Image (cartoon, rainbow, N blue to C red; front, side, top):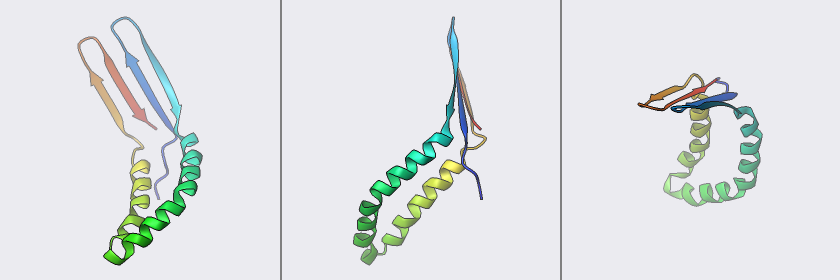
Length: 92
């Protein structure tokens, strides 16, 4: 099973100055779980409404797929360079 990413490093370099920023992504998981718990009654109602049409099971898999996409972000590197600016994003 994939583990979710823990850090995101963003580095922005301008013509004269730049800065780097480390964002702790592991702090987003408890927040996401709280939001999921709060929204779970609405998700359950939506699944119950969609179940007779055959789309309820697919709606349940959306949550799992979203988590798998988040876990797949590990190792993502984005490097954009312009004439006077550059942006580098790395997910660790």
